[in-house]
Amino acid sequence: MLTAHGWRRCRLTRLLAIVTTAVACLSCGVNAPQTPTTEALPRGMYVRDVAALIAQPAARERLAELVTAGLVTEVIPYGAGPMLATAEGRTTLSGWIDELHRRGADVNLPIAGEDRLVALDQLLREHPVVWIDGLVTEDEYWNRGDRAAGLDQLLALLASMRSHAAGWNHPGPATRIGAYLGYPTAAEAARLAPALDFVYLDYSVGSPERAWRHVHGSGGPLRDRFAWFASAGVEAWPIFYAAGEVDMAPSLRANGTSAAEARFRADLAADPEYSQLSVTGFVYFTIEAMPDPD
Image (tube, rainbow, N blue to C red; front, side):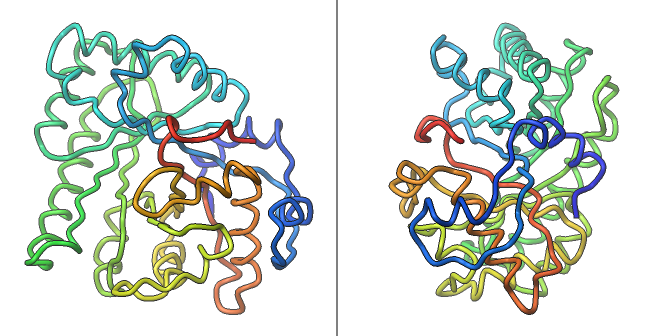
């Protein structure tokens, strides 16, 4: 279920967009189950290179306009490290974050390690009117040779993220803690869930109709992975890809983002085991590769 903070983020999108599953499924040309998914959900966009986007007026304004229109509610910027390393960069980055906040978006910063948290401490000291809405780490522990040690390190980083965020004195809401996750086991998910407010769940599939029931070669049914977190009260956000090794860019260009989201929600609602669960929102990688969302 959406938290109070999650509902705050999607007020604007609820007012600006009404999406019906019937219309969306007709537009995507597949025989999808029908369900009354009439309310738009929050939508996040990764930025591949935040410094480049900020420096390009057209790209910066495009994102700002999508935020103002309520078509993007969350922004996740890659490449902030070099900007955080200098006073000038921190000033530029904080100004851009403030611009997005004024337009109505949340900003969730990727965290690779402790050094990024220390740099954020400094940015927030220097710019006390700015805040960070969320922190998300992308430590792919499931690809490591020593998987157990990798999970322990991820949990330690999540604890440090929460500790740093608790010490930030800023005017915004409490900073939320999340992780990008590929293929945890059920036991790993049970350890991770108490440390998380939200998860970005990888869906590397070529079409929306494959997402809900996709079975990963080593990770198993992705519907089970979704349920482990959603049933534990963690906000679950599928990531759909417009770029990457496997992406659904042709479908997104042909049928639109709302159709992809409606298909996932319809499949979830039709699942006899998990239909009581809710998807919080959707995330896309990346804004540079995306068609304009509808």
